[in-house]
Image 1 (cartoon, rainbow, N blue to C red):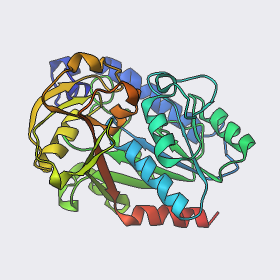
Image 2 (cartoon, rainbow, N blue to C red):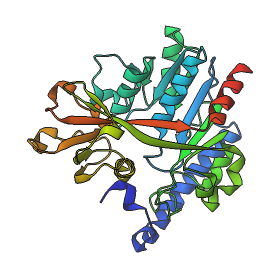
Image 3 (cartoon, rainbow, N blue to C red):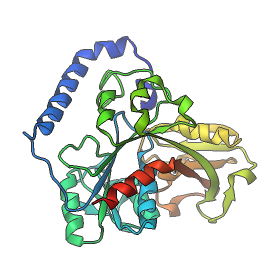
Length: 331
């Protein structure tokens, strides 16, 4: 069963896990209390930090949002850098991502962000160490912390939470549900990014946070062939495809293909971040479509022909970017 659907609806299994969930919630709440009362020390960096995080497990659109904000800051004249924990490996000491980095060590997301944004990217489970490395290198004047909402040790300048409400009908915390903490924690975020086409699609439980909600959406704009480097606009694509994905919410990817009138004849889904053996799926007469994140998990030279990367255009309401820019200008 895919991780995205394990907690889609409450069941007897989830109720049996409630005692464990209560213990988890107590520990999380105690930790938040200790930081709020300054019993546990926080780190205040010398330069502004924008935290992008979530309150549910994976597939909330953090990575495309991080990239969008990084590119926006570059356009505004800033020199951003990105820090992230890395998954599934989280190094104890900071690693500065380079062209020769092992994506299995630094994570596919870190490698993708480095190559597509062309800015410093540091991977380490200790974000304070990552920031200290960047300060020593003196190659940035602001930092974006990917998946840092629960990293309370770091004091952020701007805190943003992303949430994907699709198939979200179980509101228990882990392990009985998908929530890392209660929805009420959204009150601590400066902005909340919701994947929806309109405010009418925003669910009732998010109504208390409407004043800080910015809508986001994504769509496929083209297909890029990994060997020939040919790129075809989605409107010109006429062939049926098969899909190979190892992402948190593959149904979102399939939905995007369907919305673009792409006929999906086969679909192979793997666990998020899994480096599956792509060679066993070939030869095939069908064009093979993979996600951009999956593309950066492999050496492109190993791809057979007729493997196409679906390029997504991610968009968010302009007020979010304006909020970030105004906040940084006040510092």
